[in-house]
Image 1 (cartoon, rainbow, N blue to C red):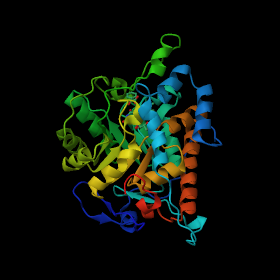
Image 2 (cartoon, rainbow, N blue to C red; image 1 turned 180 degrees about the vertical axis):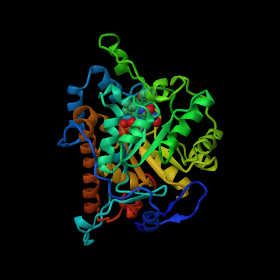
Image 3 (cartoon, rainbow, N blue to C red; image 1 turned 60 degrees about the vertical axis):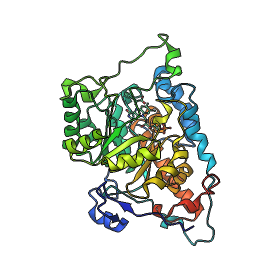
Image 4 (tube, helix red, strand yellow; image 1 turned 135 degrees about the vertical axis):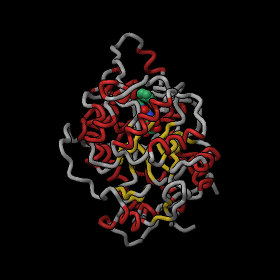
Length: 395
Ligand SMILES: Cc1cc2nc3c(=O)[nH]c(=O)nc-3n(C[C@H](O)[C@H](O)[C@H](O)COP(=O)(O)O)c2cc1C
Ligand SMILES: O=C(O)C(=O)c1ccccc1
C-alpha cells in the first residue's frame, strides 16, 4: 500500500481537489501565525499531559477539576478513547533521507492552510478554570498558530473571543429550540468572522459526571455564565433551551443562516457521516464528546477508519477524543483524519499557565508530531496514511 493520502476537497458541493499549493494561493489565513499581542500567563515545561493534569488538579478548585476531567457513567468511553490508540501500532520507514528541517506540518483544510493539523476542541465555560476564560485560551491558540473551535457555551461572548485571537476560528453551535435565537447566533458568528460552524449533534447539555455529583454541596460551585446568551452582550435566550430532536435538515439551516460551511460534530457511525454529507455538511468531526455524554459508545479512533472509508475523501474529517501525544495525532492522520482536535489538555494548560500555558500545550503537541513524522520517515502531513499503521484489525 502506498503512503499517499487522498487530496482535500473543498465544501460539500465538491468543488474539486485542492492541492496544498492551490490552498496556499487561496488561503485567507496566513500559514505563519501573526505576532501575538498580550499573551499573558506563564510558559510551561510540559513533560507529558498526565503530569500536567496532576499540576492542574493541585491548582484548580475541586469543582473545576472534577468538571473538566470527568465523563459520563463509569467513564469507560473516556478511558477507551485513550486505550484504543494502542490498537494501532505505528509502522516506520527507514533510510528515507528526511531531516528535521524539512518536516512540514502545514495542512490544507476548508480553503485554509493551517501551520499544523492540530486544533482546539470546543469546550464550554472556561470561566470555571480561569478568570480570563476563553480570552486567554483563544489568545494562546492564536499564538501557537492553532485553529480555535469556540464553544457556543462560552463564558465570554463570541465577539470578544474573535477579537482576542489572531488565529483561525470556528464557532460551535448548540442549536436552540427558539429558532430566532439559533439564527441570531449563526449571524453573529458570521459577522464576527468565524470561518465555519461546528454543529454539535451528540450532546444534551453540560456533561455530568459522578466526580462532580459526589462533591455535592461540600465545595463551592460556580454559577455557569453563558456569554453568548447574556443580554448585556447582545445575546438572547436561555442556553439550556437546547433542541433535543435535531434532524438532518438542521444542517442546511445552519449553512443558510450563517452562509458558512458546517462541520457536523459528534459522528460515530459511518452511515451517519455519509448522510451528513448528503444533507450538506462540509466536514465531519468524529467524536463522542470526550465520553461526557453517553458512556459505552466506542472510542473515536476505533470508528475513524470506517468513517474515512465510507466518505472516501469527499469531505475533510476532524477527530477528537483521548489525544495526548504527538504519536496519537500521527495515528489519527494515518487512519483518515485531516485534522485532530485536543480537549481537556488545553484546559489544564489554561488552568496552570493561562494563555501561555495553552500555547505551551499546543507547542508540545506540534513538537511531538514533528518528531513522530521524522522517526516514521514521513515528510508531509498529506503523506501520512494507512501504510504508517500496522493494520491488525482492518486487513
Ligand atoms: C470541560 C469540557 C467542556 C466541553 N464542552 C463542549 C462544548 O461546549 N461543545 C462541544 O461540542 N463539545 C464540548 N466538549 C467536548 C470536546 O469538544 C471534545 O469532544 C472532547 O473534550 C475531546 O476529548 P479529550 O478531552 O479527551 O481531548 C467539552 C469537553 C470538556 C472536557
Ligand atoms: O460539558 C460538556 O461536555 C459540554 O458540552 C458543555 C455544555 C454546556 C456548558 C458547558 C459544557
